[in-house]
Image 1 (cartoon, helix red, strand yellow):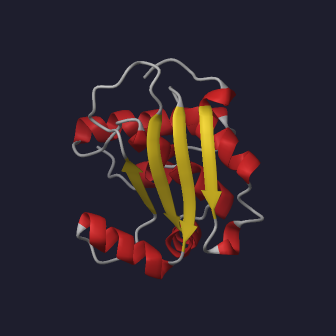
Image 2 (cartoon, helix red, strand yellow):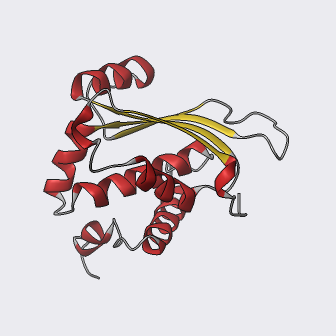
Length: 165
């Protein structure tokens, strides 16, 4: 998972059934953000949905009856694959949640979308945050990758709210 891929190793499909972010979050920006977080060949679909579709997907596949910001469906996760086999995943972003969270966190929609794309691409490649150690590793990597893209630490607000010791 440590070697950077080349741009031609990404097959990307972008879907906007919820078109609100289509002009702001362009294919070129998505490719740039994905490229920063991609360590191997990949076939990815990025899909922007409204709260109804986001809630349905989260309920049907995760058993959680609410719309969430990003869902990653990694189709070959945990499989023994040849080294050159691509990561295959769908990354679903819920525009309603994304816009609300950006406002709550005093971030631009673009900045928050870049973070969620990086987050989803890392999930697609097997990164997770189920326990504190995994969460720290993933958050550190997200912060580093977003920094290379010119974005601030997405967790800075949370870190500043921690009680000092």
